[in-house]
Image: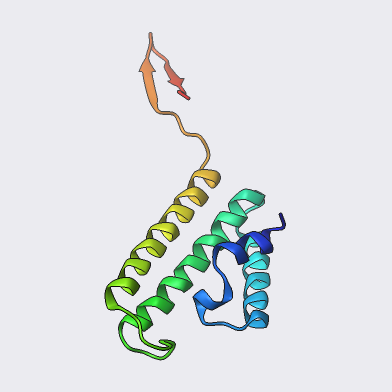
Length: 122
């Protein structure tokens, strides 16, 4: 599946209050920007997904505060639960990006006879 298709399935246009054309342009822009962030394709997708979830969280927050973008009637508790889910998804995507882009680091050092030996676990 192409990255844009994956992102569109995870965060559809209506979740951001965008038209299909606006959504496609946003996805293209995010994927273009992701190339400058990292060379790792999986990390680029995680980064873009985190950004999309951040935008969705901002859109939902506007609904909760009664700002523009709130269409029709909605339950405060339903929207609040949706915001919590989206925020958790955003944090998970950002954690995945960090995991994919953080190099392995030594987890412990053992001191030997006059030299330091680095032990990498996992």
